[in-house]
Image (cartoon, rainbow over all chains, first blue to last red; front, top):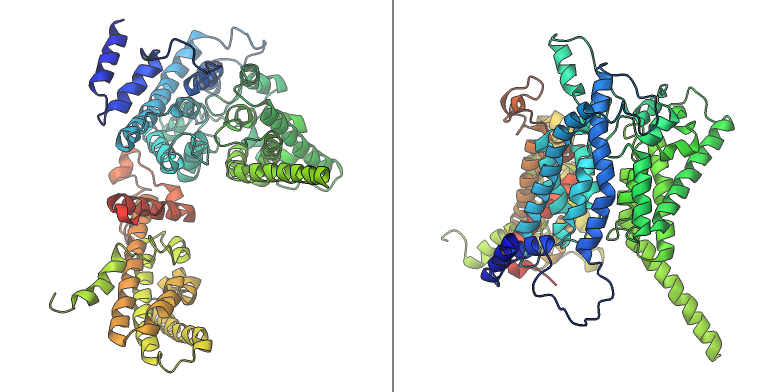
Length: 408
Length: 214
C-alpha cells in the first residue's frame, strides 16, 4: 500500500503542474489508478497500450535470457575454454552458470542504458509538451539491447538511443505518429555512424575487440574471432555451424536474435494473444522463401558460378535464410509493429511479403551490409501508408462500382 | 543605424533569421546537403553565392526596364551563368584543390533556386542599391545555414574543423579519441545534412512561434 499511496499522493499534489505527466506515468505503469470506473463502462477489452506492450516484452524475455547464456557460451568457446555443444537445445553444456554470469553482466548495462536514456527522453518530452507519457518506449527499450552487438561501447548506445527516440519518434509527435520503427532507427544510426562496431568478425563475440588490441601490443597471441554466418557466406567462406545450431541459436550474432526456436515460440505467443499480426509474419516468411528460391534457381541454372562474389549467399539453401542472421527476429518483433506497419489486411500481406523479399535481396547483393532485414523493414515502413492508401482506394472503387450496378 | 535606413537594414537582416531562404523558404536545399560535409567548402560556397547573388541582383535591377518580360528567364540565366563562370575560373586559378572538391556544385549555383527566386521576386521590381542589399542578405542567410551545418558535420563526422584536428588524432588516439571516442560516420553522409537542417528548423520554430504554419 505504501508506494501506491505515496505515488497517488504525489500525483494529486502535482496535478495540473508541468511535472504531472511524469508521476502519472509511474503510477499507472505500476498500479491500477484509484480513479478508474468500477461500474459499467463501454470498454469491452482490458487490452490497453500498456498491456499490449507488456505482452510483447514477455515474448522477448526468453530471447533476452538465451542471449545472456549465448554471450557467455560464444566467448568461452572462442577463447577455447569450452567445447562446442553437441547435445540438443537443453544440453547442460550450454546452460551453465559461468555462461550466464558473463552474459548477464554484459547485457544488463545495455538494458539499463536503453531504458534509462529512452524513458528519460520520453519523460522530458512529456513534461515539455504537457501530455501524458506514452508507453511506446517499453518495447523499443527491450528490443534495442537485443539487436546490438554485445561489445558496443556504452556511449555509442546512449547517443544512438537519444537520436532514435528524438529524431525517429518525438519530432513526429511521439508514440503512434512515428514513420519508422524507433528500435530499427537506433540500429540503423549505429550501423551507419559506427560501422566498425556493427559489422565484421570482431564485434559479435564478447572480448574479441579487446583481444585484438592485446595481440597488437603483444600481451597475448590467441585471437578470438566470431564471424557471423552471414558474414562468412558473403565472403563465400565455409560455414562450420550445423543447421540445428543455427535453429537453436548457438551462433554468434546480435545479443538476442540468434535463437530462431525461441523467436518462433515468441511469435506464436504474439499470434495467440492477437498482439502480433500473423498475416505480416507469414507473408514475410513467404517473401523470403520466394526470393531465396529464385536465387537458388539462378545458381542451379548455372548463371552464377563460384567465381561470383554473390555465390556464397545465392547458393545458400533458400530456407536457411530464415534461421541465419536477424531475419526471424525482424519479422516477428519489428515488422509487426502496429504503428509503422500496414493497417489493412490486404496491405499487411503486401507489406510483409515485400519485407521478406527485399531482405534477402539486400542480403545477397550488398556484401557490405550482409543483414538486409533492418533496411528492408525501414524501407517498407516508409511505404506502408502508401500501400494502405491504395488498398483502401481499390475497395472504395469496387464498392462504388457495385453501387452503380444496383442503381442502374 | 546610421549606415542603412531601417527599411534597408531589414533587407539584410530578415533573411538571416525569420525569412531564411533555407529554413523558412526551403530553397537551395540540394547544395546545402551536398557540400556541407566539411566546413571549408561550405564557407567557399557561401562566399561564392554572396558574390553571385549580390552582383546578379544589381545587374538584373539595372536592366529591369529593358528586359522584355517574355524572355526574362533566359536573360536571368545568362547573367547567373556569367557570374558563376567568373567564380569558377577564380577558384580554378587560386584554389585548385578546393575547386576540385566542390566540382560540379559551383556550376550548379546557376540552378540554385534562391538566385532565380530573388531575381524574379526582388531585382525585377527594385532599384540597384536595394537589390544589392537583398541579394547579399539572402545569400548571407543561405551561407549562415551552410556554415552551421558544415561546422557540425565536420566536427562530429571527421573530428576536425577546417582541417585542424580539434578533437585529437583519430589514428594516433590522442585527445578525445584516447577515451574511446569515435567519429560519427553517419555525419559525413548526405542524409545527416537533411537531419541537421531539420533540427535547425525545429530549434528556430520553437524559439519563434510565429513561424509555425498550420
